Every structure is written in structure tokens, then in C-alpha cells.
Image 1 (spheres, rainbow, N blue to C red):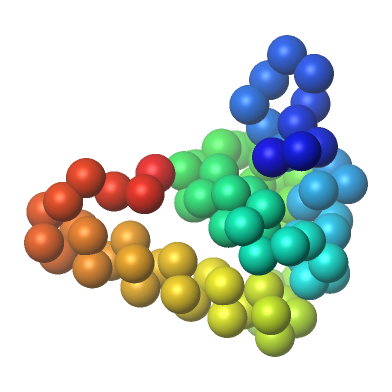
Image 2 (image 1 turned 180 degrees about the vertical axis):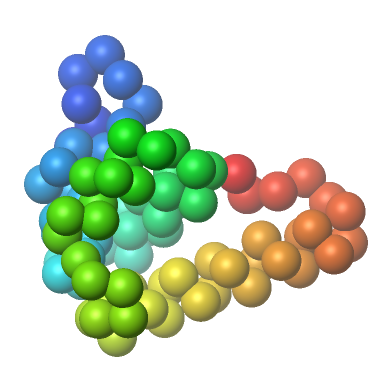
Length: 83
């Protein structure tokens, strides 16, 4: 993640905002989504400021659905996950 906070493994606020707006390149977006899906409360709380559930841009929604399907498939097959 290019916009990482200094000294941490979290996406920067600008990166979260760009994710919600659908402005991040696909690979960067997937990295941020993986981080959010890992359950980071700090980043989830910050990201919640930028969106209202159900109002994701179509590109973000498609990436989230794709990643969720990959994670679910790996869990079903009991394989090491993406996260």
C-alpha cells in the first residue's frame, strides 16, 4: 500500500477515501480491502467515515465481491487464506 502511515501497516486515510471513491488501481484496492477484511478496527472505523454501507461505487463493489468469493472458496477448501 503506497499510502501507508509511517511506522505502521495500515493504509493512510487518503488511500481509504480513494478506495471508497473507486479511484485506487485494482491491485492497491485489493490490498486495502484485504486489510479491512483482516478486521483492523482502527481502519474500519476510519473507512466508515468515508462511506455509507450499500453505496459503494460499482468498481469497489465488484472488487469486494470478487475478494469475498476468493476468501470463501479458500475457507471451504480449508486452504491458507489471502489474509
